[in-house]
Image (cartoon, rainbow, N blue to C red; front, side, top):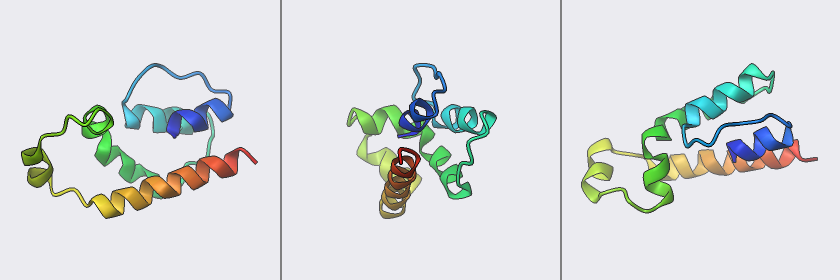
Length: 86
């Protein structure tokens, strides 16, 4: 979704799963990224693992991820990107 926001803003971006880098790129290009999306950076270590279903169960328990809160944050990110397209 961050890459969609970059594309909609016609900002070139690298092939990366580094969420902090994508957020930073939006900000550097004067895109007003809601402060709440800064928490997405907490997911950065898991971006590839979640995408490809490679996250071991013990890692999920160890890090105590609040999946419901993260899901809600990602939902809001999706709404934000959709608003950019209007």
